[in-house]
Image (cartoon, rainbow, N blue to C red; front, side):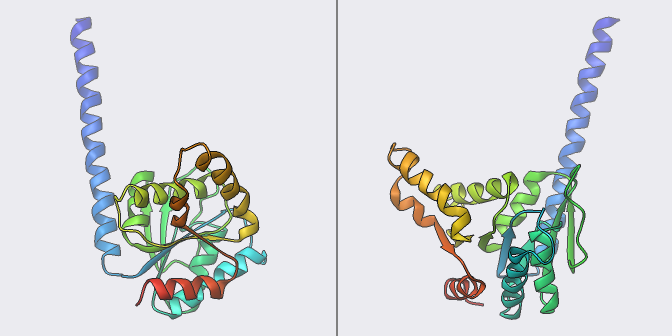
Length: 219
């Protein structure tokens, strides 16, 4: 009897895992069907904790507005802070303002500036959408989630799993410390080749960012 109960539990867990696959597939299909209509995406990342009126927030609005005016699709995580700023700028220019929302216990409430909205339960599916439909990444100052997106894109380009595209680090004063550590510790220790730092471009103004993307990705 105990053995039969144990077998039932194992089978039940297996069934739950199988159904989870269908949920994952549904999120992938929904993302592909929706975002496949839009081209020349620029994914913007950064802190969810910045508020409207903060200088970085307003500069992100300007970047997104100019990109949308130039015909690019702006893609963010759909939440507050820098994500909201990116969607706001794109919406103000009557451009495509995509929000890839995720269910989180904190810091993730959908902002009101998305005109293309997707909701995800699974982080890795959401990440697929960020990469698959991006022709450039803009990485504003942020926390662990921002670093996660930055280095995931860098690894995919480094290992040639995706075509190379610009990875722009916005605000040298924020990123220079990290880049210096990579040079003095990772490169000098033989963990990274110096030319692999060419994956990143550091910029400090909205005009610089937009001009760089326009040169690299022609709409």
